[in-house]
Structure formats: structure tokens, C-alpha cells
Amino acid sequence: MRRIALITGGTRGIGLGIAATLAQRGFDLALNGVREPAAVADVVEQLKQHGGNVIYCQADVAVRAERERMLEQVNTHYGALHVLVNNAGVAPKERKDVLEMQEESYDRVMNMNLKGPFFLAQAAANWMLRQQTSVPGFRGCIINVSSISATVASLNRGEYCISKAGLSMVTQLLALRLGAYQVPVYEVRPGIIATDMTAGVKEKYDRLIGEGLLAQPRWGLPEDVGKAVAMLAAGELAYSTGQVVMIDGGLTISRL
Ligand code: NAP
Image (cartoon, rainbow, N blue to C red; front, side, top):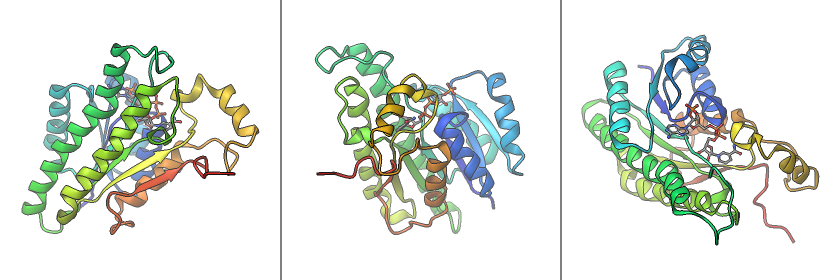
């Protein structure tokens, strides 16, 4: 049986890089996002060219009823879920110093980047445990896309850093809880990746990369993250639950 992967934020940026790699490697896909289905129809069609099944689930990950409806849609269409990739995430609308950060921005970023992904993973984990007992040979997997911001502090987007640090603990908690049930849980931690999210700060990062910020002096690409997720989803790091996979071109290597 082909394995089913649900990728939040899966129709552009890093999520699309993950979707394309998983499609090439024989997964059937459920792609989530907030845009209207018509806006992503071309992307869905392109991904189907790899020979698998692809559905789109429009849902706001921060809203419980929409998360529940999304999982129900996956269940109705596929009747199974093997891999959850918690990828969707947002940056603060406005970068403000940590002493000026507003509660509205904190709530928006935390609900979207931490609370939503945690409760989605919780629901997916419970579903995977039910499949584990009813489907012989079932193998699940949960992958959280965090950021180097889980450990690298940026004073002008503290709410983002806090949310990603929290997601790191979500990975460890679920890895510990699900370790005995063939459901490894991983964190993938990208650095500077060329997507819509970083388009507005392109010049700044071009300059920093030019000045030697990275050991590998180039922007990361969505497929760099996609390949790491595919390796994890395929079970090639099966005895490493709870681990962090860095995709940052060496940005976080300490230097003297
Ligand atoms: P992006 O290009 O801005 O895309 C964000 C995706 O998330 C879109 O597909 C969007 O859906 C979806 N999304 C936003 N709000 C949502 C919501 N409420 N419910 C469901 N989906 C929602 O971002 P990206 O750069 O690919 O980032 C993907 C992940 O990687 C994020 O978690 C981000 O924090 C993390 N990350 C990015 C970088 C980087 O340098 N780019 C570095 C480290 C970590 P629509 O397409 O429908 O709008």
C-alpha cells in the first residue's frame, strides 16, 4: 500500500519542496493551506504528474474545527495517515523589538506555529496509534518543521523564536510518548531558505551570506528541506526519534 503524507502549508515554499520530494518517492499526498482550492489547482495537478494521488485540504491550522475537518477529509479520501509534516508557519506581520512586542502578534504567531501544530500532531498521533493496532505493519511518522530560531535569538521577532523553541519541545514530548509504537517524531530545523517568507529580507540575507554568515555560502532551497523530510519519512533514521536535523548550511556552527 502507498503511504499517505499530510503536509501543512504544502502548496508553496518549503512545504511544496517537501511535497514534490515525497511525491517523487511514491507517497500519496494531502496538502493543506489557507488559500482557495482554485488558487492551488495547478500545483496539485503538477504534483499528480509523479503518478500519485494528491488532494488539497483548505484549513486554518490554528483553528480546532478546521484541523478536525482536515483530518476527516484525509480519512474520507484515503482512510489512513502515515506521515504528518507540520510545516505551515508564519512570521510576525511586523518586526518589533522584544520590548515592544504586542500581545496580538504573540497570540497570532503562537496559535499558528505552536498551538495548532501541537494539537494537530496530538490528533494525528492518536489516529496513528489506532492504525497501529488495526493495520498489520503500520509505520507512522511525525515531522515538525521548526527553525534555527528555536535556538538563535532574533530580538525583532521574539514571538517567532518562542514558538519554534516550543515546537522543539513538542517534538521531544511526542517522541518520548510514541517511541514504543513505531511512530518516530523528528524536528527539521531550516536556516535561511528562499521562499515567500524570506523574499522581503532578501537583500539583507544576500549581504550576510556574502559576508560569511554560512559555512556553505548559498541560500537554502525548499528541496534541501524536502530531501531531509523524505529521508525521515522513509524510515532511514528509524532509531533516532526526537532528533533535530539541521538544514542550515552550517549557520549554527559556533565560531571563535
Ligand atoms: P511561506 O513561503 O510563507 O509559506 C507558508 C505556508 O504556510 C503557505 O503554504 C501557507 O498557506 C501556509 N499557512 C500560513 N498560515 C496558515 C494557516 N493558518 N493554516 C494553514 N496553513 C497556513 O513559508 P516557508 O518559508 O515555506 O516556511 C515554511 C515553514 O518553514 C514555516 O514553519 C517556517 O517558519 C519554517 N522556516 C522557514 C524558513 C525560511 O527561511 N523560509 C527558515 C526556517 C524555518 P497558503 O499557501 O495557503 O498561503
